[in-house]
Image 1 (cartoon, rainbow, N blue to C red):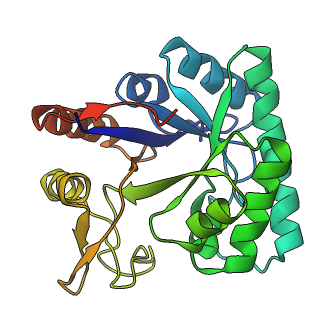
Image 2 (image 1 turned 60 degrees about the vertical axis):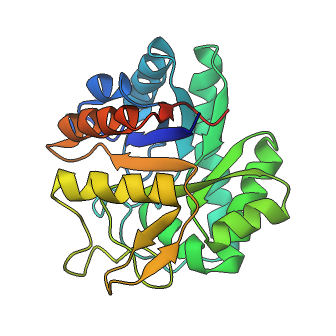
Length: 252
């Protein structure tokens, strides 16, 4: 039986600003990546999100990003590997505290936004992230873009790696995601996105923006929780996967 992890970035509300429908989405996914307060989230939101993830039996991961609330962590920043090591370790620790309070295990780490994309192509930044994860808890899984430097770094440092693909993003010929600053970076048609997912999961390939078919490893599918149609889309995607005989299950 074919199995796939379905993950979503959650806990991105902040203060009086509410983003996403976290509780509703949690009933359809297998893993949650919880914002740790730098690019989004705050202590109250983190606490609440961990509690809800536990309620729905969803695996909990840290989602560390750049300290950039205004840019939602999606703006490239000039950082050194030491900067990245420190900010990732700090944020894992913050989320782990709430996991301990709710007596649930932290299962994985998935960098967010610009940090994720930079680490996908920069070996030094990728290794800084892998080192931070390993020093905190070597049993944690490290999520990274399929075929990226981050996956390579995780393997180098003995971590269990999870190759991630994106339902609603387009791909470049080198396997990286199309930058959000470019037209066509995000797939808005749910039927097109679902078709892409089924191809990635069943055939382990994806069609790039140039029309080229490239190989891709799909251990986990990411759906974004910060848009208006997130809940409807994750329902449709889960149903489509189920119809194909594919079981939704957390990696570990």
